[in-house]
Image (cartoon, rainbow, N blue to C red; front, side, top):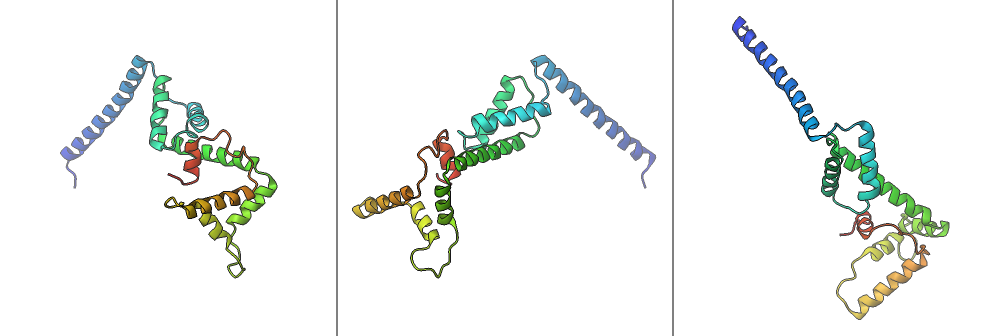
Length: 186
């Protein structure tokens, strides 16, 4: 059972806590006003996410660097960083990936798309000849030590890729960093 004294003590602590948090809000406002910053709005968040997706994410594979770039942009625009920075970075990354994939698929001819589909499709394992999955794994495999045999093997891989009939401009506008990140490369 609480005594009158403990109830008063708890009430006083609650009042003190409320006054501290109210004071923080006033302090934040005063600091923002003194430095010329303003709080981020939903429109600001959408603009920042769009800018990250179009301008920065295609060339920057690191989410930490995307976050730093976003915070620098907020500082330069005298904008208080939004509370959902990680969410904005994830959204920008997903949007950049979707744009890259859509642009790549749009450049494919139907015949090349069909050949790629067959390459990655799971075919009947009882069919004679090498399985398509094995061909894909072979194309993705590291060449190994340099020798005449590995050189001929790599030439054979190039001929198989050329046989797919991929357009020369398939990855135009995409950075090497983006292509490497999307292909799961180093």
